Length: 79
Image (tube, rainbow, N blue to C red; front, top):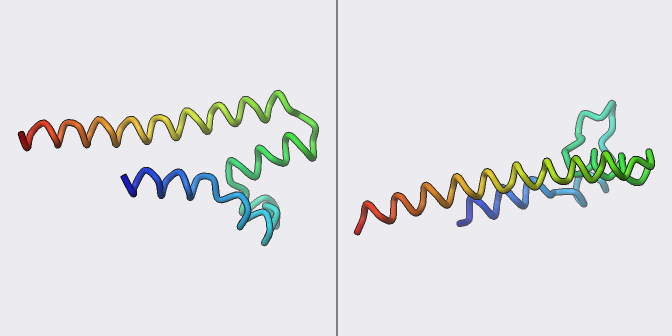
């Protein structure tokens, strides 16, 4: 469970990156969330930003699903 929570936390580590670098220099420290923020609020592309957020959700959903399937299979073997 801590693995899934850590992945979600790292994936959404917006405040630290935005406060320190804002994704610069040359967008080297951009993450999916900072890229989404720049699209929506600096470039005014809310449609593209919402598409990026859906992609991020799908990535996190896949990570959580793989973890849950692995955990449930491991739990069934122990019974």
